[in-house]
Amino acid sequence: VRISVTNNGTYTHNGRTLSFTGTVPQTWSGAGTDFGAVSINNTDSEDITLNSAISCQTLALTNGYPVTTSSNLLTVTNG
Image 1 (tube, rainbow, N blue to C red):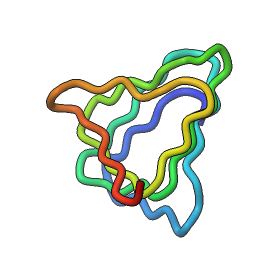
Image 2: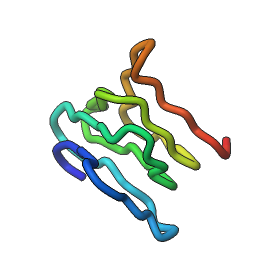
Image 3: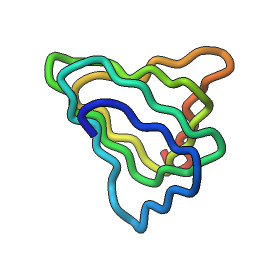
Image 4: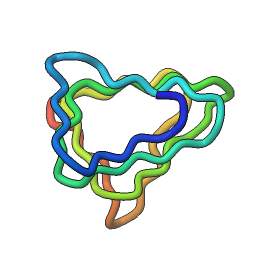
């Protein structure tokens, strides 16, 4: 994903990794969705702002990180 992700329906990860590899700041939303494995490896350490509460099974941080608030948290279920 090079821009942003919004899930307004059903997201099925099928055991694959959702990868953020953008060059500009990104947003991520989709409350109540398990995004499976997630990787953040943006150039220039661009961040990803969460616009809703998000959950994923695993999270790999290489470059950049998720920006959360008290109501838009990121939950990793299999640390």
